[in-house]
Length: 584
Ligand code: GLY
Image 1 (cartoon, protein in one colour):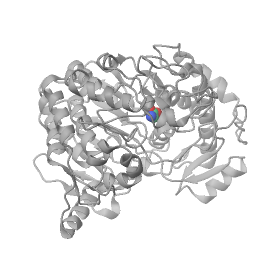
Image 2 (cartoon, helix red, strand yellow):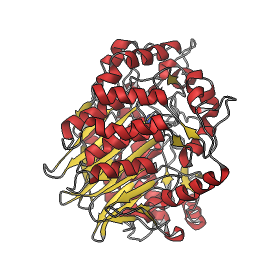
Image 3 (cartoon, protein in one colour):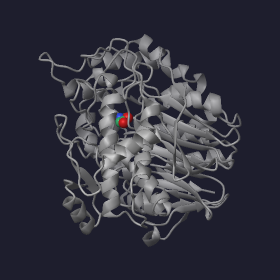
Image 4 (tube, helix red, strand yellow):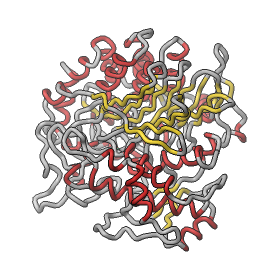
């Protein structure tokens, strides 16, 4: 048990402070963070002149800002934030998972995608998640060693740093704050305090996790307790000293493969040592005269963000300063089409041919848009419906960074479920992912997010499971105008589109756009999920068109930056506690 309780009064003060800081703070160079008045917070962005960092967790945001102030660029700051979140947001920030980083380089006027998605180990087979009767077995794909993909995060951060870092801040300097936080401990507050009780059962199943994340009686820690992660500090120290080799070779790699094998997985030391992050060409499109740059396969995110935007452009949307029922209807019908395409065409481009150009073409979208009835919802009944997609808390995490030179990073990474498999590889502090559930265990059988797929996304040795993560940039005349992305599993794509259309079509300020109630339809199950807060009139109008509207809990956590004539505006999504936008 590595928790140390603080006194109640200290807890109280910490809570008030974290609530104020977690809402929104602007840092002027050299000045103390100044909390903004609480009752204006919901709609007010943080504004800055030069640079901005927006993440899910306040300490990580400040660490990123410090790197920028030292002269590091957006990529340097992203590396520091990525390592810091592995300590301060252990349910989603990670060393043991994977993700995607989209980078825009202002001077070179180009964008690049770093793919550090986990890979299936060499023992993976098409039927690895089936039971003896040939049925998909979610226990295998979500709760066993078979679910664990070879982690990509450390390789991805190193590749980004070596290729696109400024060279002004050393690798070790970028990792040092994370090491200190792991070694000295972080106070359990906000997101951490909310997430640990929810994950208690899964963490308690593994002594290696329980001894770090739970108290000795296996109860979840309380706000104000301190979480110390000594093994993680040592692993981070090895990475600081030896680069990614400190993780993918030697003791850490051995312990990761042993932990996976102890739970029935087949990951070998050679699988871990063989992991490679990749540079990919982003998918690109246009929307209302702006350029959209997003994540290519093995994420489905960028393809479908662009496909849906193309359909919206082709549809007769009403001009309005707020989402109208008619516009939401058209958006919903476009989402259904794109998610249906997703189940058929998308997979790891190193294994299957993904028709990216066709899916993102204006012509294809125009044809598909013609099939949309402006008055009536179409049923999604052609494929056997799956069980309702769980409306879970958000398990992934996204951050957005813009530096003084106009370089930007949109990064989304994940362990898949909250705390991934729930298992720390003994002696490493590394929480293991259960990402391989993102494969289609069997054609047409939904995964943990209710998403269906087929052969294109079938498991195979060395293959990356299909993702929905959609780190996205919008450029105006070649300059970054928006940096966004979100967690939320299948709802990532729709969350990003909700925010983008609010800013671009309805001209909302970024905080308003990020706070506005979101809608989501993923084709199967055939229901339109809306967040609380959407007007009852709008819901009635949507129901009158035939939509089955389900009002659910919050969706996504879209930390977003928009560049305006007023300055750089950052919005930390308030759907979870502890988020922070900081700028200077
Ligand atoms: N694990 C969720 C995603 O990558 O889409």
